[in-house]
Length: 421
Image (cartoon, rainbow, N blue to C red; front, side):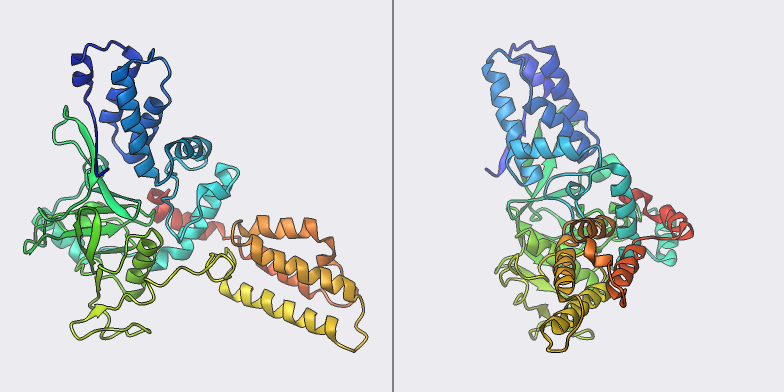
């Protein structure tokens, strides 16, 4: 299944099928301005009931379900349930499409908490986001370099699913809508690299790719000059990623940006043994990377099996590295006191505190800081008890307070991060 095509409203009518409601839903899918709106319209079609077993409608519903499965990288029925459940919390939520540096809407119970935590995540990560330097912004303006609006950008969107890259196509406004494997063989990057395209990955985890022409269409064109995680060139054949680099003059990614992108793609099973990964940064920033003579990154490390769920480093924690170390060190101290021959008081209580702190590390991988601390305090009231030492209570307070940002920080950051939500 490399191409999935949905008929146009005109084609539907020409088949002699008369169902105004289905026709309206079909028109909405074709008119949708972005992937989120289109997904909701596809869900309306997939769950359409009033068709009286009409064969044409049933065929289109089957096609729609395939599209939903590809967009969400899971079974269509699961995708529909999740999209409906979490859309109110995050209108941009698509199952299995949340980037590694952000927590999915599935981890939140209301939109207010989600927005607070998402804002804090962007504040924390914005130092790693890339933006176009002012000089290049001015140069682009003088040259008249293209800047895409939302609808124009949507045509360049790449969907990562089933370990491959996909893209929607609609050659004419009234033409059929096709979802097919992305291929760069007809693309040209930077006016000279045939068979390749430029790409950017947005802070929200959206991937966009296109041909480019020096002085007319650059990396900055894709996101209207907005912030990105990484940008460069890629080569794709039948949805398979064959080559990727971080060659972008406008965004000039650092090695860390490229590694973030590679981790994202590896997690989504896009990188494989045939993928050539090349970096211009390797020669001057050899941070444990193995480089061959012609300077491609060795894929060893990226292609090794992902860490198991039992490895505490394989899951991201909402705790800072400093706090994780502090909790682990305190657990070791308490365990040492419990095992000691010295008559330390309340060894049973210390054992409960060890269990509570261990549980905190576990909860922090799936919950935000406040919820994690609240839950362990409810389950282990003894965490705050102590006649002589308040070290556990003090550490919990320090962790809880770390989740609070000043109003000035939030006001300042909102100006730059509002488009990430």
